[in-house]
Image (cartoon, rainbow, N blue to C red; front, side, top):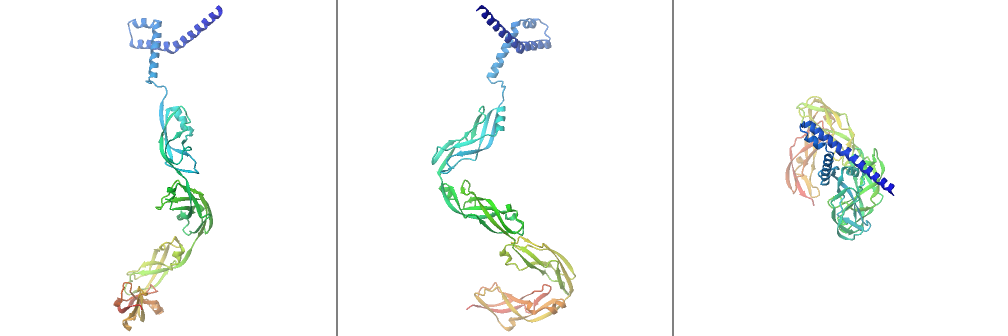
Length: 459
């Protein structure tokens, strides 16, 4: 028993001795060295400091006092050995959990911000994990208005957090459904080649089902299938299939309505691409009068016809493309470089420029008699027109140009006419006579400048 006690005492002495050795190495020896260093620097001549420092208990007491000061500073957070910070994880997706077959929920935000607070190392780890999940649990809520809190999974439990928003008010509605007819809206048609056009689109279904609460369904004016024709990369006419065509609901003002469930969510479209075109002649017309004594004997152009690509409605009304050249005061041969304008509504034309050569010769003139006067612009459903006399029904037209053109000119290609578009009631009127001809190289003038006509109501 005595030997056991002696061994215990020996162990305790060894433990205490080891503890003092540690204290001596960590506190006493460094502090002693610091004190002697200060003494040497300050060059104390007195032996007072030496006597104090040579006492072994003084250094021990001094080390204990410094230890208590350090403990107090740490405990009171005067000194911190760990950095505490905060980070904000913005726009984190919010996931709502509820019976989607039975209810529709309004007021759930798409995202929320997470404010994490804690040690810098933990914050760094939380940012790297990327497993942040914000949920709104509505599984136990029925129809009505409810104030609920968002929940966060907080993968690093040593961090504290705050959500923004933390709580919110939601409204739970009963879900209803309606059948609607689909409409087609082709998009990105301008991305097609200029010679191509969408002539027809057929969807694999005409009707779809929309689901939401009753008030919201009432705002749906139409549901469109947005057919992106650029996705087929068409280079020629043909029939193409586009799958997974997006369906979108719109209100009366054309604004997209979100959070409307559409069943099915996509459809398949069959798109027919065509290239309607028409080849029409290029018509060269002159503007102005050539110099007196000169006349145009010939007009030639490098382009005689142009192929126009447009919708059929435009092509049906198109008979030629006109290009004007300015010949005012012209007396010598001249070559013009002109731009060919696209007709209104046309997507493309085969030629965009033309070279026009005008050949000049000495001018002469010739009279063409008994040219009948035609009428234009009169409402023939309401009125009839007649000349006041035989002299007012026929005129003589003087045509100027080169002799070869005048000799070959057919009088039936000369049109004298009066414009009656401003006449709105019956009566006698004196109106000017105008003349035009099919050959633009010639200049046409009526010898009779005005004629008298009578307008009568149609019986």
